[in-house]
Amino acid sequence: MSSFFWLWCCPGAIFIVVLVWGLIILWICGFTDSPAAQIRDANAQEHEQQD
Image (tube, rainbow, N blue to C red; front, top):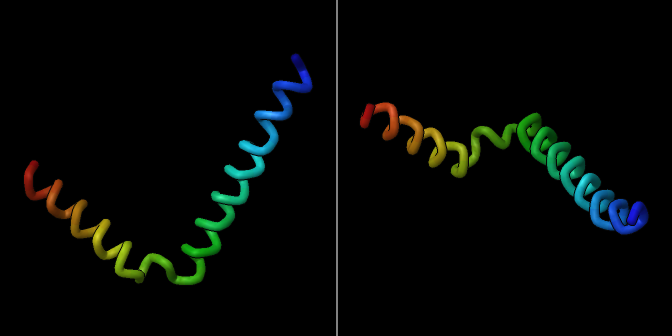
């Protein structure tokens, strides 16, 4: 049971760590100025206007 747990848990944990570091690197490299961020900001402004 222990080996079964690690077989499923370790790849997931590694994937999460890589994903988080990837997002941090993209953010540091100026990813916040990308069209995706502008779309996200536009959506946030729409939600604020609705409130």
